[in-house]
Image (cartoon, rainbow, N blue to C red; front, side, top):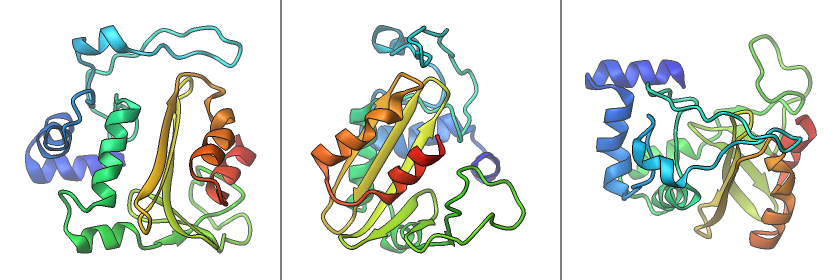
Amino acid sequence: MVFLQLAVEKITGKALGQYMQESVLQPLGMKNSSYIWEPAFEKNVAVGHKANGVPVDLSKTERANAASSLVTTAEDYAIFLDAILNGVGLQSSTIREMETPQIAVDPNCINCGGGAPSGKLSTTMFWGLGFGIEKTSEGTSLWHWGDYDTFKAYFTICPATKSGVVYLTNSQNGLSIGPQILEQTLGGEQPAFEWLQSKN
């Protein structure tokens, strides 16, 4: 993501934060989202908490980082995912590329750094372009998660039914409530989330 950010900045001649505001966030109406900290966030920000409930100091990013600095809300992120589901702002060929498996997931690790896979690659989970892809008996879903120490996030969307869920938490334990949320909202098989839980 960092290398991709550098490519975007080189091609557009703009800092990532500015480019994303102009090309994605503002056009979609994501009014509570930014890659750099904005004073307006002060009145509505969630403070992160360690696993034992102790709050931590809030980080206020001054320079955009494609991999980690997006400040957003569940509502704004749902707007973004809805745009993906409905092809807003993207060519259909681009969306097809994003939904196409590029490489199978190594079930034995989450952030695999180089070298050969540690075991047999998954036959149900893949990495696409910007999304994880999972295939179940119910169809194909796109998913991803966020892990910024005391902030955890997860989403999954199903292009065929144009349905999905996104949730953001402010706790190191934030992924622990995922099974209940997914069961009550989408139901069915969730192999990607089960994989994440097994590795955290």
